[in-house]
Length: 207
Ligand SMILES: Cc1cc2nc3c(=O)[nH]c(=O)nc-3n(C[C@H](O)[C@H](O)[C@H](O)COP(=O)(O)O)c2cc1C
Image (cartoon, rainbow, N blue to C red; front, side, top):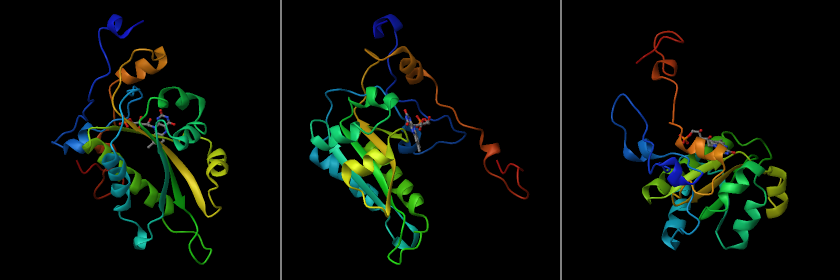
């Protein structure tokens, strides 16, 4: 089926339904797979993604987040793409940027780095929100081969590749497999706030 036959296309936004207004960067962020094969990011936008990541907070300002990144058309992009799972390989070829987020797991004394992955996650969310601010879309992926990434980019033993990230412009449903089209159109859902935030005793909803 073509997008016309569906009479709907991928929505530009799938805003979070919240009980109070949220900042648009938070409310509008979502993780599309329909990316635009011709959209690109400017040098400034590309740099801004990683500057935003650089300015994330971290335990004791240890700054454990590292990234390997490339833009479509560059060798690094293709090498990252080669490490992605089969499910993620298809739609990510249209990304403008592919990156792998890597966490420093060992400190200078050879001991486990406290909050290493946590620091990478904070840096990655900064990157994602900066992408939204740039009018771009970002989609994180656990579906990649960590060992392949380590070998491909000679990532040292004290670092752990944790997450792959696709950034790009929004595309259309045209040419997408049925399984992915359905996911693109599915509403975004979350557990209710009453399941998540407690006061007094565990499980007693605050809101
Ligand atoms: C750690 C992590 C791993 C994820 N891995 C994948 C993945 O391998 N493939 C994929 O299509 N989406 C992946 N996602 C995207 C999630 O499925 C998505 O964020 C979630 O369904 C919520 O949707 P939203 O981001 O649109 O709000 C991942 C997200 C996170 C944070």
